[in-house]
Length: 428
Image (cartoon, rainbow, N blue to C red; front, side, top):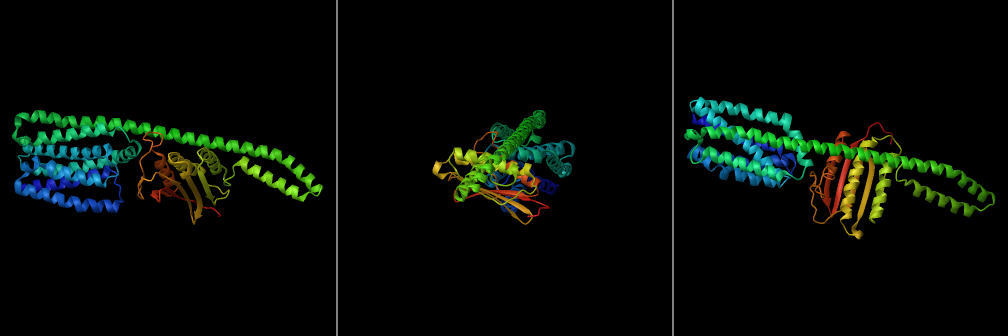
């Protein structure tokens, strides 16, 4: 029956990988992540199985942390986007859940299956897919969202899970395997029962943080909408004032032309045009998007930043709510980055143009020279706080809602944010 033990161990090791890969965030694209995982973890699993076949499960269980846990920790630490508390908590969570299943099925097989490994094999075949189904159905999406939203507070949870993993591993295998120490079995069962309650407490606390993050995100979106509408209202009031003043401008122009003062009339008309552009802040024909540019042009002027615009859109109907959200978050991130630079380095450009059925937005701004962002990754918040931690995530969410995508990266000491959204039924 040793073949069933080895097969169940192989099944367990592969499913530890699956469970962890469902919950952590890789810094590489999916294909490269799978390739790196395969070339490192398959040989590692094979070596551990060979060790079980040669030295026995009891001996390998004692050195499992050295032969499997620590090597896989270093591999996934290299691949992972997160390097601190979020990564270590996720790693220990997956490993501890798997170790719990292995220990529990081992004890159940010894006392209820006669040590024939049949009960162990069947129970592991069922329990690992069941845990993964629960993780996919209830945990994966909010947990990945939480990792992207909350940057602090993970260290204490990671420490708790690491200690629990070590406790479980040591208690189950030292000085000999737990099934050879029947006098300690009641205490071991209490440790096994304690683990689900511990993780339920941790995950409940994390879920409350997620609800807080969502509430803050909703409040920020409402604030953005409120501010955009306020700016639009101010623009409309300026337009009404300008319309009222047009009568006076027309009278003056008529008088100059009636007297034959053509040059003076042209100079006066140019002055009126300049005043209108200044009052209206006319960056594009769409009033809602223009309101965003009016707001941020003033902010960039205050920090003496070089603000360049290349806007190739008209007054056609656009999904302005999501577009304003994308622009506001992108420009706010750029403002934060420029504010930290020397005045002579503060440069930003914005492009908006059509490409077939898509509207393409590019925001490029100077950034710190040590900032490195690969394509496909989202950089961590520079503020380290709640108000800025989800700006780019909000941009990505809005772009995907419009049938597009977002990409950000650094090149030549510039941070580039590219957003492409699908625009349908436009005559452009």
